[in-house]
Length: 467
Image 1 (cartoon, rainbow, N blue to C red):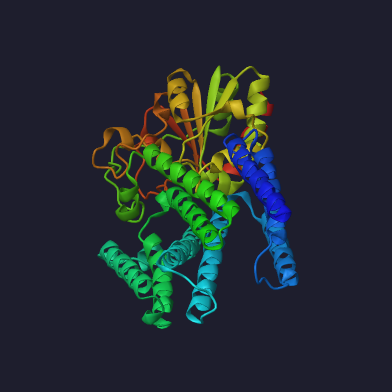
Image 2 (cartoon, one colour):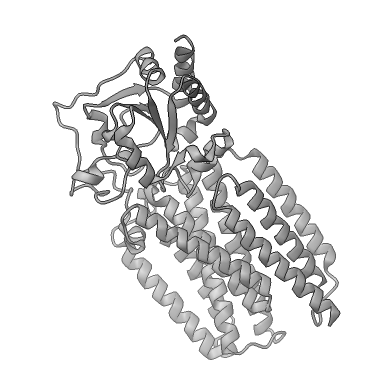
C-alpha cells in the first residue's frame, strides 16, 4: 500500500509538471523552461512506473533500461543534428513513433488475448481496437507527412480521382471489421485483428495522401492530437493514470491548435481533410500581360530601411530554408540603433508547422514583444513605413481578400499592401506552397529583391553599415 501511495504521488507530480510545462510552452519566452519542467515530470513518471507493483510482472528491467538508453541516444543525436528547417519533419517522425508504440502495445495485448494469457471483455477489446486504429493512422499518416515535407513524395503520384471516396469506404470497412471483432471476441479468429491492423495502417497513409503541402501545419497538429489520443487509450489498457492524463493533454491541445489553425485559414477541418488544397497548382489569379515586376537595388533598399521610422519583417518558410534568421536579427539591430521601430509579423500558418517562425526567431534571440500576431500586425501595417517579406508568399496574398475565385479566398492574411512600401525577398517569381499566383508582386507599392534570402540579407547588412 505504501508503494502505491508514493507511485500515485509521483504520477500526480508528473501530471502537474505536464500541465505547468504546457502552460509555459504557450510563450516563446518561457518555452525552454516549460519543456524542461515537462521533461522532469516525464522522468519522474517513468521512474514511478518502474517501481509500480504489477501482479505477475517479470524481472525485465534490463530490457527497459536498454531500450531507454537506445532511445535517449537516438533522440539526443537527432535533436542535435536536425536543422531548424527540418524541424517539422522531425515533429512528424516523433508523432509517428508515438503512434507506432500504440500499435505495438495493442498488438501485444491482442496476441495475449487470443492465446489465453489475458482476459478481456467487450469494453477492453474496444479500448484496444481504438488504440490500434488511432495509433496506426498517426504512424503511417505522420510518415507520409514527413515524406511530403522532405520532398520525397510527389502529391500527384499518391492520389487519384475519387481518392476521398475510397478513403471513406476504407474507414467504414475498417471500423466495421473492428466492431465485428469486438462482438465476436476470440470466435472471430486471429486473422481478423491482423486484417484490421493492416487496413488501419493503409488508411493512415491514404488519409494524408490527398492533403496538399499548404495544409501541412494543420495535418501535423491533427496527427499530434492522434498520437496523444493513442497514448490515452493505451493508458486505459494498463490502468495507468499518468498515460491517460498525458495523452489527454496532448490530444486536447493538438485538437485545439488544429481548430485555431483552421480558423486562421477561414476553413473548416473537413475542408482541409477533403479539399486537397495546395495540390493542384492552379490559380484563379493569373498575371496579365501588362503587369510589370518592379525591382529595387540593394542600395535603395538599404536607404529605405535605414531612414524609415518603422519597419516590419514578415518571415516565411524561405527564411527557414535559407537559415537567415540570425542575419535578419542583425539588420534589426542596425535599424534599431538608428531609431527605427522594428517589428515582426507572424502569421499563424507561416512555415511548415505551428509556431515554426516563432522558434526560428527565438533561436536568433529576437525579443518576444517584437513578434506581432495576425491581428496586431494588420492593425500596425497602415502606419508602417516599410515591410520586408522574407520568404513568405501565400500568407501575404491579397487574392485572399479580393478574388472570390482564388482557392485561398476568405483566408485571413497579413495585409502588407497597406504599408507605405513593400520589399519582397524571393529567389524567383515561382508561386508559393499553395501553388497560386500572388498579385502582391505586381502591386504599385511593391519592389522585388531577388536572390537567396541569407545572401541577400547579408549584402543588405553590408549596405546599411555604409550609411
